[in-house]
View (spheres, rainbow, N blue to C red):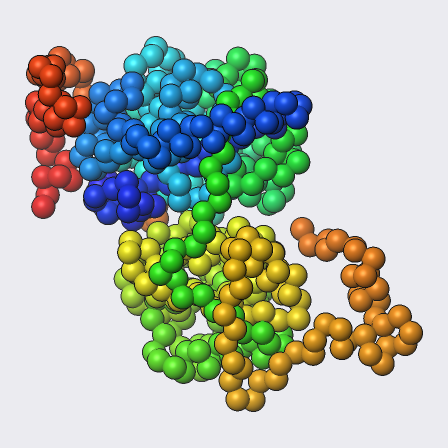
Length: 519
């Protein structure tokens, strides 16, 4: 059902929602042309943040479509997150926008709500793709599509999710959806390029494009694909970009494809206070024994183990299975139906331990993860926040343990600088030895120590760089029901009272498939 899918896919924010569903939304800031503009943007961001903190913004008070507001009301979404409050107004005005913010701030709703409102209220071609949403991974594309179904529940918006890893039947369904005219397409770059090369898709009349998690798409090598896709769009369009960081490549892209974008930046948030963080300083060869030691303390349940490479994911999965642990692997070599099966089994508690690459660090929404283990420390400290953010959700407590080997020391320093705190160290279990201090390794290697040490002294930088379903066709209805809604009273009552009155007076005939009627 639509409502259930949204609850699974959305990122819950306790301060915003009273129901267990919440879409992630981020906002970003474009590359300024000069230092003065940078200073001015910083001042505006600070002022906007203060205003948002002082006075909450309600969705009801924004010029969103009545159909979209009805869906929000059904889902018990009332107050905007800061990124939603600041992004929705300029997006409704048709402005380009760059948003720099973390996952979990409410980004999905920040761009979907105004986009759905524009398509509902303004004339647009019925036989064309009107909005294209680009996502780096299949999992995020599915999550966006599920959120879209909920927000578009009362609109006539047609949408289709396009991502790889499916059989030929799904590919043909996507082609037919394009031919019929899909208002919104949610796609991964590779899959969309395949359709473009086969002539299945025409983007010459697409007037809105959204690049979600643009930094990840560039990290995954999709820059050329993205530029190829953008060249298929008309010059007069609205371009929206969301990113967790602002590397030079993102700034370069913004200058090339955007026109005078609005800049919005949300500060990087810290991990939830209820996450019990700790680390083991160990040798690389001792990581697996330490992992077994952790699991021996009690039966592991609802555990995610993050590893940097898919090959090591496969190897550790085999090792733990031989030891009798109930685990499964998740990595990019799996077909889409295999990923869906693994995730479903994990959600249903048929699997205790999920061993995964960062493919699930931002694309999994399960509220009761008890423990996250970083078998390898992430290179990007913000990825550390994303990883451990899988636990201690919805007010629960959780644990996050990171194994710091010889190659992870630099990553640990970056993580602790971001967190502005020193992560507690755990004593090594019996049989595991502490690694040699960094300054000890150079002894016995000649006058200047090892080559790697000399490079460090020179300041050299590290060179590390659902089940198958048919495309969703949104349910439709006439606007006549809106005309029957009683106007809100304006007899001096408070804003909250008037808001409640408007909602109470909003009458809508229950739909047979309305999830609200299936309690």
